[in-house]
Length: 297
Image 1 (cartoon, rainbow, N blue to C red):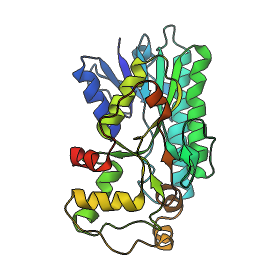
Image 2: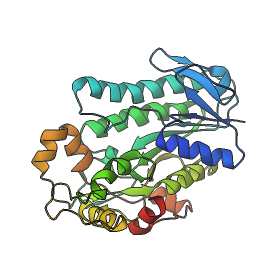
Image 3: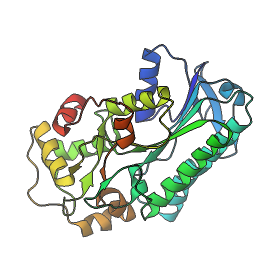
Image 4: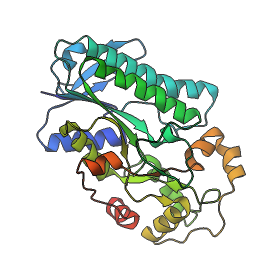
């Protein structure tokens, strides 16, 4: 019984696929090009095409596909692409699952901690309601499409992922060049909380969710020890044995340069508690930021 993965070529998809195959599991990646072998199957969410034969009888589906949020400045056209790649893609995939005679037991679908909006220094868990902003609205729509699979008996879980720490790319990868030159600095006030998770804990938590039938609905994939942006900056500088800039990057400069993404993605705060993971018995490999950074760098 295969595990189907969308977004398998991305940072998280690559790490998860590697771990599943190391366990001896069969993985089939849904790709938007000609499949190159039995480990791939075709789908094209823009026109509603999915290889249903590959999905039939699968054990689970892990849906990670979506245009990168920080790839470019948010024009109205790119915001439509962000929405379409997540909402439309999930709608097409869930619609295909509904037509199967043997649907998977579980659908694990990506989301983000941006669901909560800017929560300041308040402690947030999965019971906290939706916040405000474009990303919060996007996460709500994205998760809503995934939850539809529960209507015909598929257990669903939505991964509200925080800042993933990996030496192979992602948000941390974009920070490293500046920090390695000693040019890292707090953003805005630096007081906003950043909820992070080491990539191996992200993989471990996702595997835990796949195997644990009692875990469903939104699940925060973050370390239980969020830090402020100021502390994150200082700790990353120390991990690289580099100093950091004494003056923060002004919020207005970030807003001018990066627009709406700066306000929602960099200057807003999320102090997240992964309550469902902890309650279901998941044990984090990394709960200290300095140890996590040492492990991934």
